Each structure stands twice: as structure tokens, then as C-alpha cells.
Amino acid sequence: MRREPVTGPMARWQTHRWVLADVLPTAEPRLLPFGAAPAQPGAPREVEPLPGAQVVDGASYWLFPGHRIELFRDDAEGLFLNLSSPLPCFWVFWRADEDQLQEGEPMAVPQIVTLSYHDAGRWLDAQEKVEQVPAPEAVVDWLRAFVDQHRQAEPKRRQRPASFKSLTDRFGQPARVSTDKTLRGGGPGPREGGGA
Image (tube, rainbow, N blue to C red; front, side, top):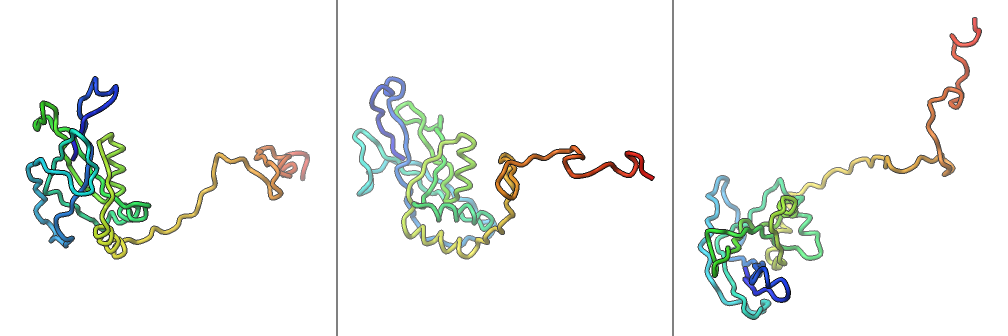
């Protein structure tokens, strides 16, 4: 995470802001046994910006180690949506932690890192803070192999007619639906009129 000074008129209300700087994979992808212990994020520590990273004057960079990215077979569609985007990415859901202060202000602490488009969408719908950064090629290759193995394309469903479109007859002329018997071509029924 990067804590950078706010410039311009907004600086009157907020002197610094937190933004996601990058996600750094630290281990090769591997299968975990069912029921494996959850990841234990480590304590944040201030670090130097990585070579090639965006350097902002007056900013400090913080590393939050120990987050685990897990892929689940039942979310293969959400992973596929990320993979099929122009730039597959990591999404990081973070919150300001009042218990961890940096120069008297709450520190932005990543809660979850994911590759699932569905997870990110749910967090955004819940008004959470979610940011994204591009995933490196090795992670994209791992994601692609997982999706190829586990994704089952959803069956195509019959498209329902659009109820908001006006009806037309076979010649493209506006059509009406009527309940009047005379318009439907029906004459008097057997009990109507003087029938035998």
C-alpha cells in the first residue's frame, strides 16, 4: 500500500490518502489439502518502492505480507471473467484500521486479495474499498490452467421476448391484442343468437 500526500483543494480536509501500490506473489502456486489452516497475515512494515514502481514524492510504502489467494472450483466463472478481461488483475479489499495508526491517521489494511471478478463485484456492491492492479504473467498462466481444468460453460438459455418492445405482425406493422370476440373472427356462440 502507498500512503501519499493529497494535493490541491482536497488537502484542506485530508492530508494523506492510501492507495494500492502492488501485489507481490511470494510463492509458487500449489494445491492445499482440504481444511488447510488459513493464511496468517504478518505485521505491516515500511519498505522502499520496487524498481519500476510509481514513485510519489513524500509517499511511504507499506508491505502487508502473508495474504493467500485461493481459487475455488465453484467460482471458475468469476475467475474466467477476470481472465477474459483485457488486463487480468488482482483485486484487493482493504479497510482503514483505527487500531493501527500512521502519523495519527488510520492505516489502510488489506483484508482479502482475490482473482475472482465475482468476489470483487460483491465487495463493490457492499460499498467496500476495492482496488486493482495487473496480475503478472505467471499468475495469469496459473489462473488460465485452473479455469481450463474446472470451468464448465453455462448452457445457453432461450432468450425471452423483450416485454417492452411493441408487437408487430408478420409484415412489420403494429399489432394489437384484443379480447373483443368480433375482432378475433368469432361469431355468436351456440347459445347466443337464435340457434337450434
